[in-house]
Image 1 (cartoon, rainbow, N blue to C red):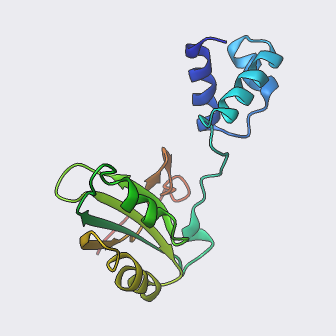
Image 2: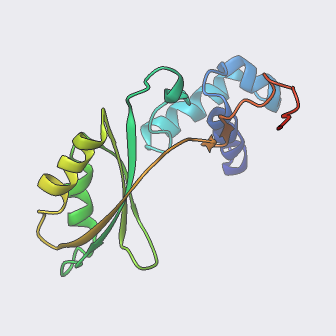
Length: 164
């Protein structure tokens, strides 16, 4: 299967990972076996890393805390930022690590049960790593949109807001 068709399959799976091979094949006018083979190849080549759902955690866990932590580090000779990033992403509290341009080098997403847990992670684990120079922590207050999905459901309440 050509690269363009594989890209179309990826877009469909990214939008809805529950689409069946047969549905994808119908949508693209392809043979289901070829679609299944293309998906298997992309899984084997780590193009597709896993399948997941986009969850509005605010509706099920009121105590959940997410922090975005900007980290300034000193890159290491011959490995740059990779060794430090690896040390950070190995912590179970860390859900994502990004190399950034700008005034900070890494952006770390941390999830915890409460603010104190995140604060302890920053003060006891993250900031004590050699070559970590500084951190700035931002706590997420509300998610409006994530991974292309709008979380703020305005359609449920169509009433006009009237103020006195």
